[in-house]
Length: 406
Image (cartoon, rainbow, N blue to C red; front, side, top):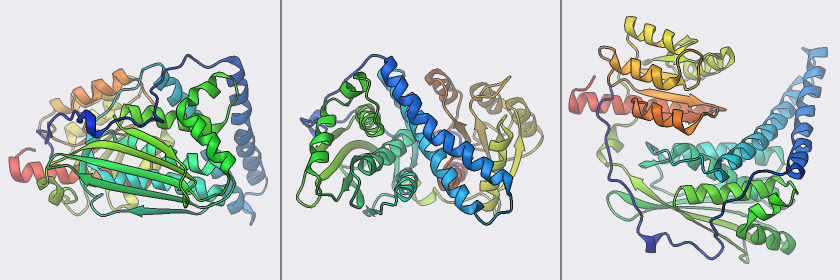
């Protein structure tokens, strides 16, 4: 089980290696105006109306043959609505300076693949082909902000999706080590199209995307490119938007990234037993059902409780291999629950993974201080969740074998 954390040196990238390109301008902007909110209101109500209308059709004939098509359309509308709300709230948090880098250890390829799954779903909803090229070496354990990296990858592809109405999307990820502990991650997304008008528009947005937002004109691609800028700045990277002969619209992001010790690479996927037991704590019954189903299908044993207090009581009576904990629960938040868990006998090193749909940076920081190992975002990506659970179980097995920590 996990005890002492395996650490890498604090990473401050050399200035000459992450110099900003001429298209990147750090910016801060004031809050949203009435015109913007009016435009956003219309954009939100469109997919919401689709969800409600299609749901009513399904309820009229629950066993009808058209239900699968309705479900696909509902998922598409829900995804669009989630994108709108998430992008708006994230943008507001970024421009207010409320977002901070959240560093944790994770397999790089799980964050990349999770972002690409999101992007592929959006591309499929728009009937657009998306092809990805993932070079070798992306399975390294790295230290960065997994949630923001996943969001950045999805956003890069979505900007390409929304930028023009034709042409396939291509994505490429490359990791170039600088040495034992540091490397450079390059993410590229481009859309094959011949529309010079859209090329010029995207390049204009690359300089100051917030200018159009402040003008009251809402476009989802404007909000997305603004978020890309903020995320790149948060991750201490650089961004360049170019026009190439075979890739008229190309977005290229370069991020410095810390590489973890190679010895952890070998043991990260190991498990302490055939069917590890996972305790899930969430006050939302639907979330509990979804999380339990995902873990059970991945051949984990799962036990669900509906509060932080119930999680502490369950751990006092039974042995578990990992705890999956919602950060915001009535009575006992994730930070308090984590601290209580760490005080229990034989629980000082049990992996605790947080799940959140959006909480304050103060609560996130408190969870980390009290010993939470990682934080995943909602909506939950099933494969990313399973990969994270396996990674932290492997880390626990490694620490137990090499350091005797339980």
